Image 1 (cartoon, helix red, strand yellow):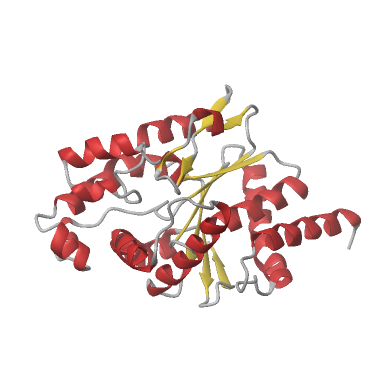
Image 2 (tube, rainbow, N blue to C red):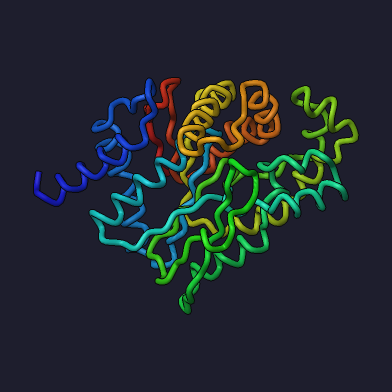
Length: 302
């Protein structure tokens, strides 16, 4: 192993060490690095080398599947090994402000007060920013930031400034690449939230229409879609608890969800997450299966 490979491995292990929460260590670190992260980075690099416009990488998977961590690992490898300029951000950063969500929910359904589902993102800004990032005539760009602990967009002084055109854009999010359903498929409620709080199917219809129109336009821009396939929806709850634990360590004294709040919160995501487990794994360019302990177990590349 040469010195540059050793530096890369060291950076990777150091990053994971900082991410670890007490009692939840990362497993098979070097195995995952060699068998998953390096081949994926190589795939991205070769794809870009073949066509300079293949620079938008979509990364999706159920809540708590490790999207943000994996996006950062790929960024480390692409920058260190391939000397590329890489940016990564989440669809979560484009949530509408609490003020905008209140206004939209008054017109439609109270359920849109809760961030997460299609309809709660600023799709106009997101589409415009992705177009700018992919444009040959790149100009300085501000990527918004969303503070989940206050459930609102961060002030502009905390936004990310992109000064140079990136070689690679890693765009991650739980619903990235999701498809709209048939109208007949959304009629029957999938959980108590839909049954009790969306009796007239207003919320579900708007979400589906958003996926069909505004989100499809955004997702069609993705050149390579990577999908993290979780074992089943029940692990969304378990892994979401871990996310809140991390958030509580990083944001002392700020708003953190308890177990009951998380149970209700993930009901908002259930329909699309289950649909993606069936459909997106077949459509994605790279599908990675996760086991119950968060380990990447197998990978299928188209």
